[in-house]
Length: 488
Image (cartoon, rainbow, N blue to C red; front, top):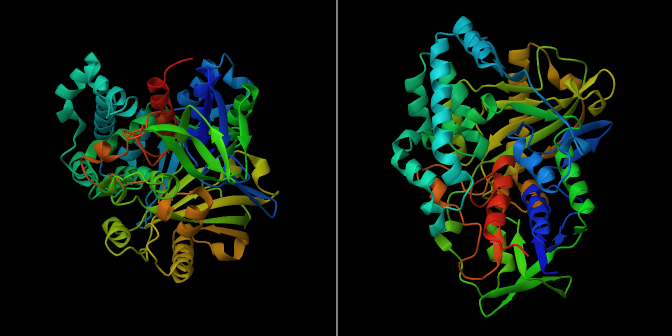
């Protein structure tokens, strides 16, 4: 049986191992950490449990597909619930909005509380659906770097519909023209942050993202986001896949322009196929010796990073839900701080995820687990200790101002993740969460391919390569590799 080696047990790496095993390969996964999942792990502290990274589950069909391909019932491994309310939004002027998954209900909420019309919401989401219909077969589910991808009839049809993806306006320009209330433009501008980009620079094509939530739905796994990883690892192990934890790969070896395996702990492991789930920057810089690097690609602007406070909170806050956004008053200045100044705004938009609203065991009785995140620049040598201290005070002041409560007195546990620790823990260069940013209209074409054009049988998956970051796209990167590997 031919051997396939996967470097990294992030979700894309696990998915690649499963898919290659089902194609007849003997898959072996190397993971430098002591646990699987990469960014999709968990943190436990003082009786509280937190999902460490991604907190919103969309497009669950891409996870379910891995189980059905293996002839398994996904429900035997994990379950998830669809959310009736996707998010709660808070504005400095006192406006509070509930983003219901029911589009009619959401549109009426907007019309009742703002100057925007329900019809504007429905038209916008219809355009979001159009962008998805044009792009998902061509840009999301296939390699942009293979000629055969352009020979499909649906690809030809999408090319003729290219103007419908709104690639030549920024997301902010498109959204300002779509809504009669700038606060709703701000609400939909936020979706640029789903792949670490700037809505004042990124193309309006990113308005595809709301379709993922409002058409396919937003979900929460019964055991939290980390249960997705545990379920996929269980499936992989049931298929005979071996995971080697605490085992860092130091080199990808090759001969005559064909990959031959990897080196780990000074030992050679031979393989017919190697898949790197490591950030593409580190894959080239650390693992590929004597191979010319794609300098323009590796030197592209990185996506934003995150500063996350995992707070154990004493007490209950019924005005907050599972997902909450407290908007900055001047949204553009927040992104200017990140992208121009490489710093943190004094008034950042705050995201709060509280899984204990649904999963009671995630916090002790009478408490809540707050995942409090703001968007920050990638690590470029900033004085993070000072920035973190200042950001914490600004976050607490904003929480106190909007919630009318002194949250600082309720914090009984604290763990912090910043760009430096994101890089060290997950192997993401500069702590950027999504590889390269999408701050220009050609970003979709500028991500690294899922295969090497220099070494045969070397492939790449995960958020730093095509088609991009986030759970659905990371899983699609594994699917694209699957489509390009021969079955044994």
